[in-house]
Image: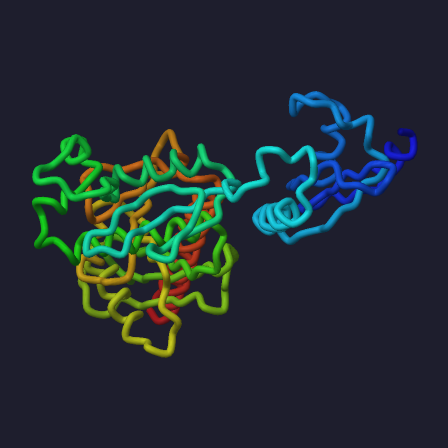
Length: 344
């Protein structure tokens, strides 16, 4: 056991997979971790955590480093299925992580599952089932979607709770519903740390004069400063943030050489969303809030959710890109004011 304790000291503090082996090199247990060293140490600190004590049988530890927890999860699953270690009882079948299914219907249904099929579209895998369920529940408040297996003949309770747009009676709103699903897909992929392009827009002016707009960009959850853009408001006069936002978004979309965003975020509330009413790209608005990080609005509900009701990674990205857009817009506006004073 002293041998093992010394080995633990040398383990990496990185995401990855660890394998416990006995004296005969037989695999006892395979696990994944955000921090291999910390997780392996916890096994020895709480040997009966899994309801059975195999710690005394461990003679060696093998590790595989990964880029992130998701990659570690996939490797863990693959190794467990292939090697069938004795003490990985609950992970020997396919029910080891979660996917969000989107049916291929005119009005798609959203559902959570453990197993994929060849009929529907799936986003995942997701590690934290409870967080995923909470995320989808909160999204329904601003992006009302269908979850019923078969369309009923009359609206259900979710419609009365404003958590479903009731395609069963609103069959003419096909385009609107598809836009809702488009935004949900983008948010799920962002939550799943997939490579998405997120753009945020903000307006800055002084009593309606020298109005400027900014566009900031995140890709792979990181700033892409070389794609940031500044706009001088040309057509809108006076203090009109909605009109100014509409102008810069339309001008931005005319640049076919610029990569299209997967999701647009506007600095503002429900009113600012009017600027993107006819834009087919997924759009949300993030308004400031005194007591909490911010309020998230969509075009499809009068309700809002707080930014801290989103998964931590999405909340952080939204707040960072919003702050960047605000900083960038103010910076450009100050330059215009200074230049204007110099001219006079």
